[in-house]
Image 1 (cartoon, helix red, strand yellow):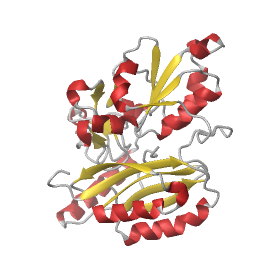
Image 2: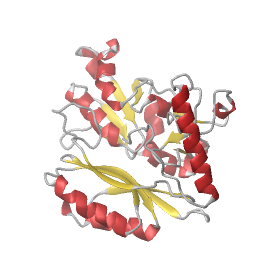
Image 3: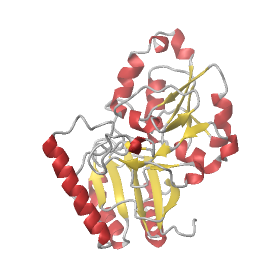
Image 4: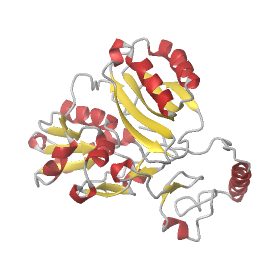
Length: 317
């Protein structure tokens, strides 16, 4: 833990049959609030997914509360630290899926790809016969990915099945002998994407256990095949090797992750616009965004956190 780190972040998910998931919402929300924990947790019939942050004792209490349910006793999580609170609210949401793919017949509780430990991932990527697919969204891939990985340029995860359908080399019986390796931020999207490939008849399907975050946590930079930073769905924006804080900030208009170079653009206006959205906002919208930024700065000057109006956002996986 860094010496200036005050907030522990826990990213977690588990596919498990939760027919009573609706009844779990209120007590879980109450437990988080009682322990000063904030973030977002998604509950669905197929399991739980989310990221929470707060004081260490509070996070440990919420994790213990979850694991007290026998169905969640083996729930795993990944940890990182931050000097600032990554979230401003606590929300426990009810969903149809804990990660949306809209393939109703898919069940990751029954069939998924073969897990690959971070220590073995480099060897798999070095195999020229393996097709490596980054299953994340375009704005995530833009700031970092594994060397040689295919980028499907997804706007959101639900586009993955259509993208697979459009790849000629992945069609037909012969194609099903292709070795496919898939990865994502924390592993949850790969549970569904590899289950999808197995459902489509592919024999050898692999996925990075624990996702990019586990890889960055365990693999030292000098042995790494990761290039760039990893986007995360909270106010840290990105992390690097060792899960240390990255160097990206969010555009508060479109939520695209921006590097220092991006912020040198004449189209970048703090809190108002960037290269990705400057021509997509009306003058009225830009005026409202500028006023919101002014209120944020006034709140910061008073030592407060400005929550503000709802802004466009990326859905966490």
